[in-house]
Amino acid sequence: MVPEYVRAVRLCYEGITNNNEISSMAIQDAFQKALELDEEERIEDAVTCLDDVFNQIPNEAGYLKFAGMLYQRLGEDDKSFGLLNRALDLTPKDAELHLGLGFHYTDNGQQDKAAASFEKHVRLDPQSQIGFMFLGRAYDYLHDFEQAEANLRRSVELDLDAYEPHVQLARILGRRGTYEEALREYEKADQCESGDIITEIGLWRINALKDGQVPATTDLHPEPATVVCVKQGDKYGPEYANRLASMVRRWSSESPRIVCFTENPTGLSDNVEHQPLLTDNLKGWWNKVALFKVALPGVTGRILYFDLDVVITGDIDPLLHHGGDFVIMDNDYVPGFNTSVFLLESGTRPEIWENYTPEIGAEIAGDQDWVALNAPDAELWPDGWCVPYRLRAAHELPDTAKVVVFSGHPNPEDYPSPWIKEHWR
Image (cartoon, rainbow, N blue to C red; front, side, top):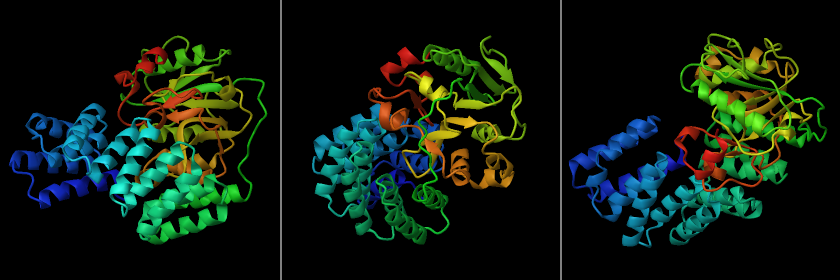
């Protein structure tokens, strides 16, 4: 499935090329190459490609709009925002510009402004299936599920064969407890794109909810869980594990054990215990599936796992003492889970490890999809405890947030928001 952001940007590019608006071959080549690199997920290369012609971009709406939307896709917020607003000054009734600004605000945790931009977009283009879909998602992030559902239904009506609106509508219906209708929407999504893993995850999850299999634990465990992390390869240096340990100590009234599974303990602080990697044939996030082994070396009982690039921003005693046997983050983007923060009673979900094969690692986009397929009945952390940086914390830190998780660009060390300096230490 081509991401909707990519599709919208490509449509913008096709619009200016079809209208012969790109007079410079150098700029046309750079725009085309940057699009291709983005679709190949070569983000840094795509940014470099655009940067090479940044000062050559004419002050004309078509150029500014495309470059602004693509920079937004690539996470270059300041550049995208400036270009889009310059284009908007020239063409204030351009629906695509309001769509681009909506994307910008969505990705920077300003969902009220995102909703306002998407509202302007659909008023200018009332047949915009993408616009209504993202307007629905903005209301989802604002916890206005009634408005979210209404706009997602409109998106579905505008293109019955479009896959993602069905998925997003099903997701909202599940949140609202309308399980039978959610199942029907997932089935419609499957008719649009048969066999897509996101649809399968959604169906399994809704059935688990409908059948009452998802617990809502209120009991507290008397002993804190052992905090664990995994450091494999050189993507993150020891300073990430050390800062994680520092944040854990600072935001807990306990002194929990902190264990890092790694092949290279060099540089780890004395208060970070280390154990060998649980297996030597996994790379990156797939190392997390080994945490579901029946037995872990040097660790027994309950574990509280954190990705190395999280930022702890509030009291984590409720996470350390939570009484559930498997508690995980919701995924704010698609049906499923986010494995950046989870609590596990060791050995209670062995199938996640035992059923894993290298072929699965090659076929599935990431560990969190595999976890969602195998544990659709997992309990979720209370809403607002663990939040994605982009959607909920880029603009300001929510009062309810205990952990902010990062994915892709930026990293905490980039200090993309002022509040990070206070907490990531």
